[in-house]
Amino acid sequence: MIAPAGSRRIGIGVAAAAGALLALGGCAAGQRAQTADVTSVLDGVAANVGSIALRAVTVTPPSASGYAKGSNATVQLVIVNDGLSDDQLIGISTPVAAGARMFADEAASTFTPPPPSPTPTDTTSSNPSSTPTDTTSSTPTDTSSATPSSTPTDTTGATPSSTPTETAAPTLAAIDLPAGRATSIGYTPDLPVIQLQSLTRGLFPSQAFPITFQFAKAGSVTFTVAVHLASGPATTPSIDIAPTAEG
Image (cartoon, rainbow, N blue to C red):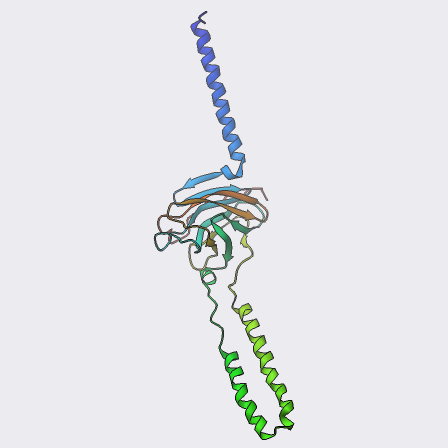
């Protein structure tokens, strides 16, 4: 039996409305997932978690054709704290790097410890020359003079142990994110630096990979970031800040 034309039109309208509701429902579900809350931008990607907004996230372009396996790569971004309370970036992780470290500025991230001082070697080498002199002056009495020879040994043993502590590369346990402010990372030498260390594979311009940012209060967010094709802007991008009631 053939349905009247009016009935067919009503059926088509109901099906279309149902399809629209399903599409809207799918969008709403995706917005609640932190990993899906990512927006592509011209100079990187954007992601949100709680009151924290990450903007223009990208890996700085390599000086050569790409980052070699085992090398380090730096991340460039702006973190906006739209909340009413301070927060902190406490960790970054990605499967393409053995670890990630945070530094106060570019000088700290490129710091290399100086070579150890040769002074202990010179001190020990001078001891034997003095020992025969003392022995010839009075052999029986100077048997106890062997005691001073142990003193330089203890001294040289203490010197190297303190040197690495003083020359260790300074790292940050966290990067402070004041409420209602944007914190730029990696744009100029005086800004904080995030460094992906000991890459587990080579990375090339436009190549993308997952990365996770962990915050003290807002929680964590995982999204996809890419290696930039060209050098980033000389100045920090302008980011709108609209404080919210979220903590």
